[in-house]
Image (cartoon, rainbow, N blue to C red; front, side, top):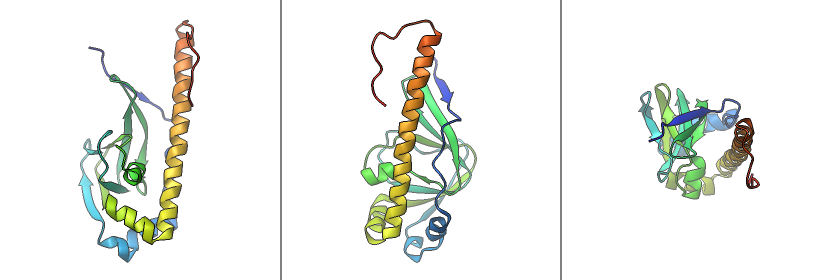
Length: 173
């Protein structure tokens, strides 16, 4: 059985932190207070796993989370850690699609959880929330395209470094 490997891509930019005024809103808005559930995630524990159905979103209050995705049965990609102020699981929650990555605590973390149904209702009822979440989802899409490009370049460099030729043209990206 082949051994598992983890490739680290430190040059992939993480999504920017939530806009400071929106972060204040997330922390103080009366309409959110009753919807948020504070959780403490111990070091090494997964907040959610790649492929799981989303149940809501997580706002990272403190600590660091590693985002890990699998590209094959033996290779995992670890992108730079996200820190306080980040919203995790948003794209999957809005689209009702499986999580695209595993979020694992690299240190003890505090997060606030908001159920998916509540997120969707908030987006419909509060335009600013909807716009900020749309901005974050757009950043996710841009980052995914960037990651695909980098992975394709890495594959091409690996093939040429080994002296092999590409037998078919690369497509995608």
